[in-house]
Length: 246
Ligand SMILES: Nc1ncnc2c1ncn2[C@@H]1O[C@H](COP(=O)(O)OP(=O)(O)OP(=O)(O)O)[C@@H](O)[C@H]1O
Image 1 (cartoon, protein in one colour):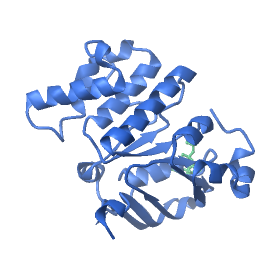
Image 2 (cartoon, rainbow, N blue to C red; image 1 turned 60 degrees about the vertical axis):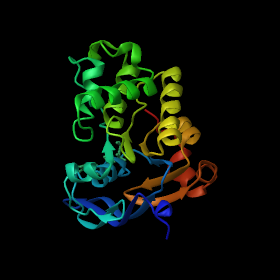
Image 3 (cartoon, helix red, strand yellow; image 1 turned 90 degrees about the horizontal axis):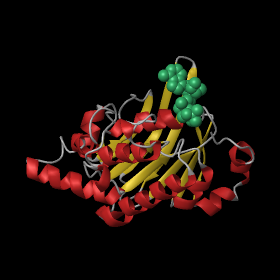
Image 4 (cartoon, rainbow, N blue to C red; image 1 turned 120 degrees about the vertical axis):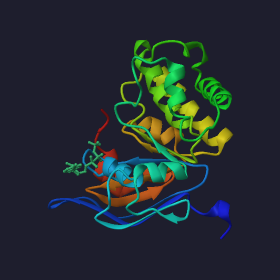
């Protein structure tokens, strides 16, 4: 198989139990180069657990995780991030009392050598996110939507090959959502970076994702393009028929 056709990430039978509860069960999924993959499902479906398993924050109870072809099962989050998989956190990952520029600089620490190169990376990242005018502002003073973009900026400053975003649209207004989706498309198209998007905003997921994986009760329910998922009877019954946005 040609390198560019290999999935960036693949799970095989990935399982995580918490006591008697199986939060993720026997999950096979793959993330391909240059795609935005949505991970959706009702509350408690296992999305966050999957996200934590993929980024190394949880160890699987069973199954395997391959990142860029390497077996990463049981590896630490730092070891996995050094391969080029970077994640954000549901409630943002920024330092409120630091400037936007210094926040983005944090994201360059492991991946970029030399202060001039780091400054250039911060400037390029800020430009890409539309944050150049705010570089000297304290991050905590920015509107919520811009703070969320700064969190993406910190993660993207490392120039990952796979960017994993945990509910990046929560609390954003329509303009901010549209803005963030445009950023995700640029990340995919201009930097050839894949994005894993865990998100409850279905309209946004349907608009921006190339493919979508649906979980239900910790199990894989469906995978497909947005139009395939919208038309999937199992998905409509389990999820899309109800309104689970929050
Ligand atoms: N650390 C934990 N300890 C015990 N149970 C957990 C833990 N994390 C998750 N669970 C349980 O695992 C199941 C899956 O939870 P998870 O948070 O992965 O779902 P989710 O799809 O992300 O939900 P939401 O949309 O509400 O964020 C739930 O029943 C949850 O209560």
